[in-house]
Length: 538
Image (cartoon, rainbow, N blue to C red; front, side, top):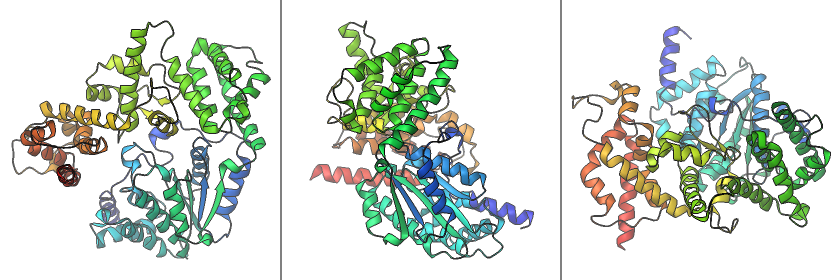
């Protein structure tokens, strides 16, 4: 391909929406763990044997309950095949993760990554974009066929790989049950490829939408592996190795004795994990973050364990609840008086409730401005929660959950009866919708970027100028206030805050979305608002 042709092809690829955080080795995922040596040996062997073999089943469905280690296994396999130069693409879904929480950029991101596999594959994908410039805005089926399946089908014997692997992690974290089912059905069509064998490693919890998707395809198109059906003896051994590895690091950092914490402590922690790697990982982070109080935190976990009867018979979900409760209760210091404790509970519910229902994660300072609270309040609230939240040292990086099970825990009143930490999901959405409107109202205005030229093209406006005039929290508010409004069960009426905002700022809001290159989202939001009004008037 000539330089000019290469440049033109790159410009076509840039037209495809690309979720840059989707890949297993994206910058934000660089510290996410891989399987330790001598752990998950059997399941890794099975996946590799399937991927390298001639099994006609093109999908390997690795399913298991929350916390059983699916994502770590998926990352390990992705890294293995990336090192072999046989990884076609990877997409790690994450609810509340913005672009990686829904299906709209799934196949386009896969296509962008596939284009890096070879010049010929890149050319075929670029040809598809040239032939159909609107493909990224079309149905998932059209995106899959035109951007992935057809380019792969055109490969010949000169393609350097006989097979490529796609890794799709956490499909249950994708919004929209119909999209989930459609993705499963479409991925199964990879079996039709002849020039190259496309393998898809797909991980998820065994949710209804996923199972329905697999019911609609033939058994000959997928192989299933249920993680929580692995022998408890094998899982406990792997968790023991994991704990030993992490406690070795804690010993070295804190100068503990070489035999700390001892075989008995490890045995009890393994038992308390109930087969869940996420329990063990959360416990290790909780102890590690205690620094000089690490030993005290370990004692607290072991004490809590000994106070429960029949811990080995406790359901895994209950085990997970217990470690999350321990972390949260530790954030409310025992020497607080009742009034101070209640204030801490309220702040925890407000901040954590916002974090778990956000549609796209925000940095701490942006979250503080959105919630209209001092930044130090957010920092102090999150100070003792590193065990359950990924709180980056760089202030511009967003706060994320270590594991989606914490969202499920916090929003489920049935899982956690104590009202101190339970978050009312509808109320959290209503509060965020109100905060979005309060943030936008004094900020949005005509010609917010000072262009002074009515006919100026948004493509001519520098992204740094847009970000200066529309900081991340304002962009978030513009994009998602309507969705929060609807999830909060809003009933719209004349002269309410929504009506007043639209009367004064409708054009300003649309201008902001245009500068963000999100005009289509605004059109969909207006349509959604109209349906909300109609429903509320019936």
